[in-house]
Length: 281
Image (cartoon, rainbow, N blue to C red; front, side):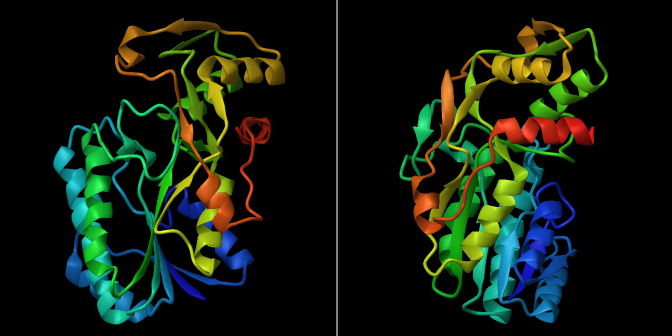
């Protein structure tokens, strides 16, 4: 299968492309600016893909350029869907959304049928992308994936786990973090790439599916794991500026629907992910 991938040079794309190739597919990076409808349409037509995995996005929630979220995540996705429906009707499409569409007050292990209540511009742009994709559902086979937090080698240092890893690698004496006791779902980018590739191959993938580990871990627990791995202990201080007033105690993804679609898929536990990241650093 010839699989076009947007955002192929991003964090997830760098793992998805080799996973697709390992499975015998032909990955084709799309490099056109998805905000440029004409250039994107020309590239999709030339690539003639059997399927598309759409990863390109504006994803850093704290970005002040709220208009950029909609230009890229919503309108850019519509350009891609329209170009694909015209050039390759019937193609399978994986759209990467986000678990943040569930909203700030969501708690526990969330199922896909939970109401969508986005609480920031990034999440709202992704929810709008999801809703708008229905306009192409009669011409494309679309699956929306909602990944929860995931990490791995190559993730930018401004994200939580790479930040903590970097402090341990440098044997820093001090680290400032937010709420240490909230428990979150921390997946592994390799398992995410495996899930996306598997959903392309599934005979009847769900219309919407969580991609998560389904296991919760606290920030304090991650620090403790890395202390045990490195033998280094830091002074861990809570910086009030990093604490969110609306933090829920526990938040993760129910993966029942994903496991039903992909019986052979498994998440990678933090016991595998953290040593991998530490060794690479």
